[in-house]
Length: 144
Image (cartoon, rainbow, N blue to C red):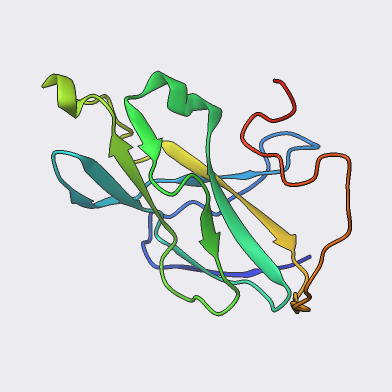
């Protein structure tokens, strides 16, 4: 599948798969859009035209464990109608201890994006749902 992509920043890196079989493509920081004591927002310098019926999902990279950061919304959702810059905001996890958080630098791979199909859902409101073995048990109800 081809996706139109636009460099907003001339230093932007077009995402590619690092290895055959990879699901996500790395996003590289081209700017720090904003930074406070508690969070930092990076720009990737890229905008995409994701076609209808697909969504871009932005995940943290496994390298995040080396930093005092957490992607604020866990998974970013890039809808097909969005044409702005792909950004990622991270919560600094070390600030409560009064320590400076280790963070990504410009040029670092900061996140990864997957572009996948999604169905259009229509809800059918009913008075009853079918029974299952689990039923309405949640939050550890399976014993694990």
